[in-house]
View 1 (cartoon, rainbow, N blue to C red):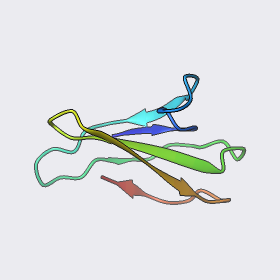
View 2 (cartoon, one colour):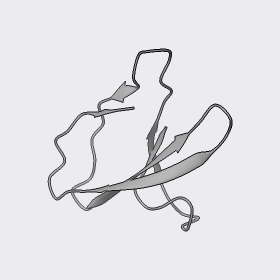
View 3 (cartoon, one colour):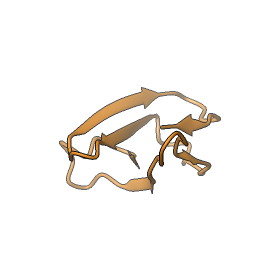
Length: 68
């Protein structure tokens, strides 16, 4: 999975904030700092076959743990 500040499909200047891989039954976990100007995060999930999907998450105060 990859975490962006804007939608990487439609924005060539999307900034990669974090990335990682889930292994077996263990989810990918990460703790990062996000600027308070970022109101929406975009999560790009890529399957082992290469299929990519992008989902968004909106919040005004980021204090969460993402697991994929």
